[in-house]
View 1: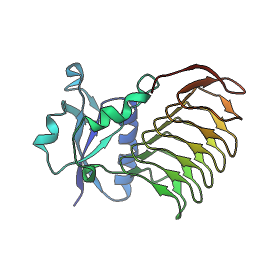
View 2: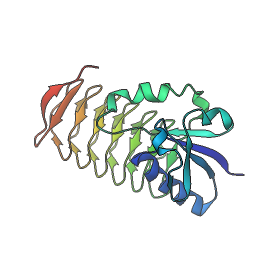
View 3: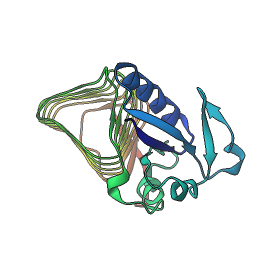
View 4: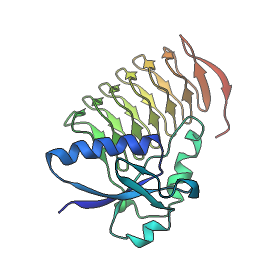
Length: 218
């Protein structure tokens, strides 16, 4: 019997997650996607691939047995991801983890709850991806590296070995991170940056090599 699943909010991450869920269901029907929910009333009634936006978060009470995947995330809100997810006020047991069938995860790696690994993601030996993370397609997280809770990792990102990425970070698509690097809590790494030295907490870093251009308040 497939489990019911609600996806929040109706953004790009959620719609791309639906593709991974459809891929899972092609092998075996694991998920029955009840619908999307979103706080924006203008989106209610919209649909993606036949799955509708049912309404706002009040829908969660109408379907108390449904599992939840909450995947808010873009560069503009990365420091609010924890606040947004926690504001749903649901038991952690309702959150699920979705791993695309094409993703490869080492048996000794760890992937947290309410985390999505999209198409062709590779999580290598001893690596850790925390709770409430989004990892977009074709990204490599190499051996013994860790990605903290509430992080968003873009597509085609290359994270070398023994890298530590703190919680609530945003790593843009096409970023490369050298081995043994530490990226502090709440940092934002811009598109295509090459990170060859540590990035401090809250810093916005861009370029090749990546350099801080400003610091956000965390």
